[in-house]
Length: 343
Image 1 (cartoon, helix red, strand yellow):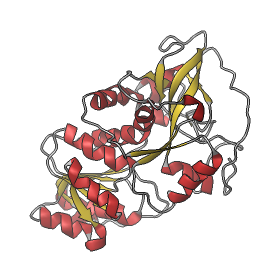
Image 2: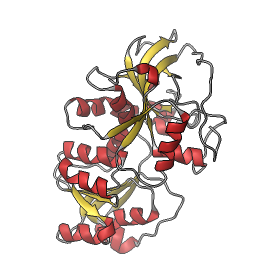
Image 3: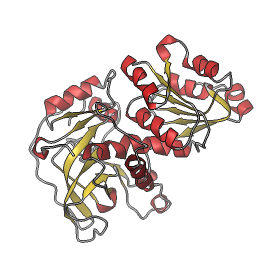
Image 4: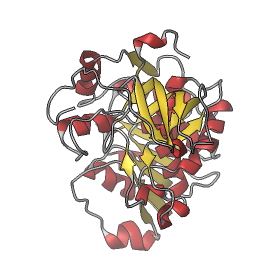
C-alpha cells in the first residue's frame, strides 16, 4: 500500500517466523472502514509499503518453538493488537496501551494476503461451528462493540442509543440485547440499514427525519437513555450521544474524528451526573465470551449480512471506494480463491 493511491497486487515472500510466532494461512479477512482511512492517509500508518487488513481468520500453518497455545492445522482468529505481554499495561490486561504495541495492517503487515505472521499470543482457536468469515469480522467490529458495552457498564434493563449501524452497530445491538438491556434506539441515515434494525429488535431512528436527540427523548418520555454508543466518528453525533443521555447516563465514544466537540457542562453532564467514556479497541480477554455469544446464537450474521470478494486489488479497491460514502450491508470479507468453499 502507498498512501493516497489504489492498492496493488504484489508477490511477496512467505513470512519467516520466530520462536514465539505463528504462520497463518489466511482464510478470511474483513475490509474495515479503518482500512480506507489508512489508504487515504487520514490515519497515520507504519512503514511503507504495507499490507493492510486486521480482521483475520485462518488455519495455523506453522508455529515457533515457544508457542504452546495453538498448533498446526487449528482454525484461529487473530487479536490484531500485537503487544509485549510483559509491561504493566499488558500484565493488567490492557494491551491496547502497551508502549511497544503494534496493530496488524497498520504498523506491520496484515491479512490482505495468503499468509500472515503474528505472535502466538495473538492467535485464538475458533470452534468449528464459527465460520472463518464470522471469526474474522468478530475479532474486530464485534469485539470493539462488546468492549464499548463493557466500558459503559451496561446493566440489565437499561436503555441504549446506538449511533451508526455498520459493522460495530450491528454487533452492538445484538450484544446489548444479550446483556438483557431495555429498548435499543439505533440512529442511521441509510434507508436499507434503517429497514434492517426492527427485524433485529431495535427501534430505528431516522436522522434524516429530524434531530435524533429529540426523537429519542420523545420516545423515552423525556427521560433520555442510560447508555449511548457513538460508532460513527463525527463531532455532531458525539454531541448527540451526550445530549440524549438521561440521569446517570454514560456515553461511550468509539468513532474517530479530528474535530472538537462542544459540551454544556452543567445541563448535559453535571446536573445529570452523566459521563463521557473513551473506548479504545478491545481486549484479548473479551474474545472467549464473544465466541460464546456467537455459538449461542445471541450474535448472528444472517445471510446477506456479509459480502465476499477475492484477494484481488481491483475488487478490494472498489470496496474501499464504496466505504467513503455508505454501504447497504454490514461487512465485505476477502476470501482467497484457493480456499474454495466458504466455511
